[in-house]
Length: 355
Image (spheres, rainbow, N blue to C red):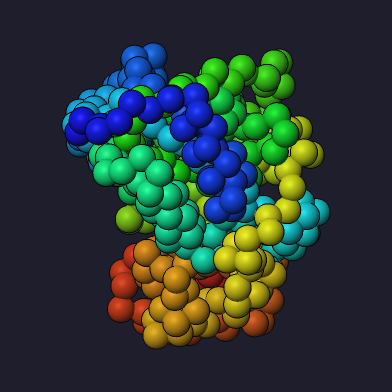
């Protein structure tokens, strides 16, 4: 879309960054649309079958790596970072080390980040419009075929680490990303340099060895994929390694040395809700579907659905030390209408020598 007045790209870019910070983003950067190297890496990853059952990763062809093919006229991408760490690291490690408590990935403890970021990005886009007049833009938060991490890397927000998450030197990796695709001729930022060096802490800590080599994650082995994306049964070979992780896994972030610089989030929406940061496995396993939907309202967890929620917790109960309470909780789900839930409950009981 043509602009009615000449714009000073540097001045406008600086203003956008100021407006973004005022809206609560922790960093704002700008990149162009050239993702040739990322496209090559993505296609190699897909060819190796590393995306498991995530067919959507291949479904859109090169729209994911060619922003102008997704949104015609796109010239620049504004990338934003919003820190979400809700508690000190030792608090989450305590939960992980307690086999009768439920570990939920820290990004999912509060309000659904999609909603939080999208609202603020929309306000940023409208603030730009108030300054420059009508322009073409589209807001994304993990909601379309967008290569958000390579874009953020090019926009200077951080580098993609060996675990495939973005890392920032001043803030670690506990943050969300969002984008505005636009036709504005903004000034682009310098890409971030990689500072992983020889460190392989994330590769060594991964419970299922999902990081098969530096910068290569086999999704089919990743606990986050197994507990969130996978629709069917969790492969038996990975169940013991899941421990008490019922939704996602933060091990590779918890061990990353750059996260000693991570700051706690001041965004109230990311604070833990319904005691999900410290609740017991038996408590969350007792939720019926109505209660599950009520307790996960406005949460990223809700899209999991009740059956997969129970599937994940059944595995964790199978990994927990045996007790009368745990065995009774499992036995009460033996007649669940879902065959998938029943299968995982039976497996869990077998771990406690209960047939």
